[in-house]
Length: 502
Image (tube, rainbow, N blue to C red; front, side, top):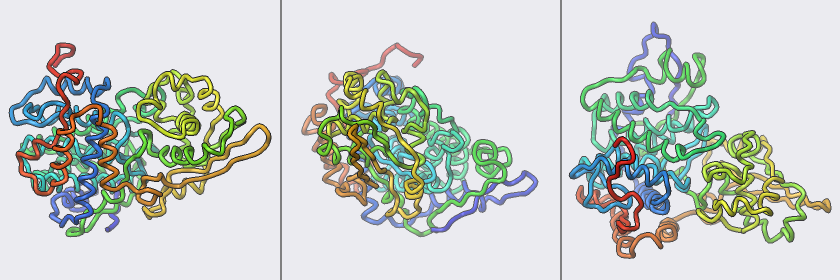
């Protein structure tokens, strides 16, 4: 790995293409470095993971709406849409829209946290959709996904978006475009322009994750994927992009991020070096914001030691800056304490999550968010006794550059009315690579089975699991079958409607 300096350049100070971050990302995307078996295995795991959470969410409102929009754009030989029959194809950008929304809806797939936040699995839907429409092989698809993960993770390590209230799809969209470019075998020049197009159109504000969080949280990564596909299509036709997109004096760093005096260092593999970033990412055992994963596990551990929840006077969670200010009381969002809040908002309230996990000793992707669960009087009482505070130790661990030393949990102090206290801490979730029970292939398949058991047929389950595990050897025809089908009569919005413009 090599760290590449990035700063703003006045227009009069010419910056050669080879020195621009977008060009370096494009060169990385077009570099045919070998892919080791552990990276191949993890790509397969994440395709399974995406499918499991997408099918679990298949009839939720935002997913059904996105599917209806995709169904309005049929295409012979196009891409598959989660749940729909494999013999029905759709325009790839709309398939990516529907599938990306399905993957993101439950906030239950993989994550990487560093200078900024990310769900690198959001790279897969648009890359897969283009692979299906463009008749690419499993090996081509594999290469594209590996690039998407690498570039996404490398940007997240170096450039903070949330500090300037920008949503994290601004790192996702260029990674998606680069991954598509790798898969299609495009020249470095074309990928370079695609990345710049993608960056330019994908900067949005973090209001999507603030206050009353709406369904747009699920749509945002899918929107990025749609923008990425369109960016690649334009540049394949010979169109250019605003340049230099990162370093320009009127561009994103200068006016949307740190400003004209900004200095960043982006770590990238050397040309010829293996792209291993996917191995640094981690999935979720629980359907909730990643910073809550370890705290849910900690709540399960602490529950047997709490005899009566009414005896609790207060609970303080000592944690990182991110957890305190984004999903904790440091966000100053009253919605995070509101029993009538949306599922998306409750998912971003560690106070609610810890209360339910402590009471139930478990977490469920549906039951734990049910309105009747959130409104339960004893839960509301406990929930409102919980607060968070930033602990510099946890913030430092959160940002540690060594993935083996990163910590995303916290220390919990439960104070009882009789003056006694119960204190415990947990740094990483049990399912984390450094946790008590790191996820392996069997765990990904178990998660898939748990989330899809009552939704898909056993034969369909077996077909998909067998197919995906042969990813590197799949033909183009087999890649088109890389989808999980649901009996059509069990799908909400399974045919074209007239509700919208499309």
